[in-house]
Length: 175
Ligand SMILES: Cc1cc2nc3c(=O)[nH]c(=O)nc-3n(C[C@H](O)[C@H](O)[C@H](O)COP(=O)(O)O)c2cc1C
Image 1 (cartoon, rainbow, N blue to C red):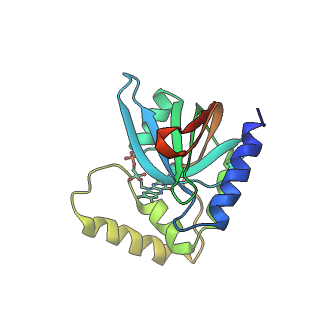
Image 2 (cartoon, rainbow, N blue to C red):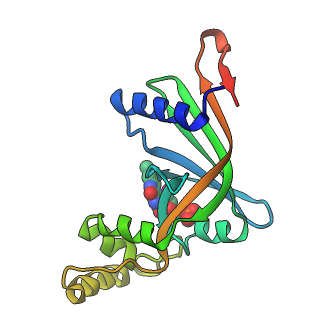
C-alpha cells in the first residue's frame, strides 16, 4: 500500500482544491482514564513534528483526558469527495517552540481569547470573562505571550483507515 502519509496528503489536497466545506474540520475523540470516550470538532493545523496537530487549552476536558490517557482517534470526512480518513494513535504535546511560533501568528484577538478562556470550565458569569479580556487587552500593549496552559498536540498515527464511497454500499476501506 502507498505510504499513508502520502495518501493522506493527496486526499487532503483534493479536499482543499474542491472545498465546499472547510477540509480542516476534524472530530477528535479522547477517553478518560476509566475509558469513557468524549468527542468534539477541532481545526486540524497540519502535520507538525511528524504528527497530526491541533491547538487547544491543555486544561480543557480533552487536555486533561490526554494527560491521563494519551490514546486518541480522529476522523476527517470530506463529503464532496465521498472520502473519510480515520487515524488512531498516541498524542503528545508539540514542543514549546512549535506552540510559541503558532501562537504568535494567530490574530491578536484570538490570542487574547486563548489567554482569557478557562476552557471546559463552567462560567458562572460571562461578565467576568469579558472583564478579563478587556483587562488583558489594556495591559498587553499589543503583545500576548502564549500562556503555558495553551498549546498544540500532535497525534502520532499507529493506524490509518482510508474509506471511499462506492455505489450500493460497496465502500472501499483500506487500513
Ligand atoms: C468547527 C469547530 C472547530 C473547533 N476548533 C477548535 C480548536 O481548534 N480548538 C479548540 O480548543 N476548540 C475547538 N472547537 C471547540 C471544541 O469543539 C470544544 O467545544 C472545546 O475545545 C472544548 O472541548 P472539551 O471540553 O472537550 O475539551 C471547535 C468547534 C467547532 C464546532
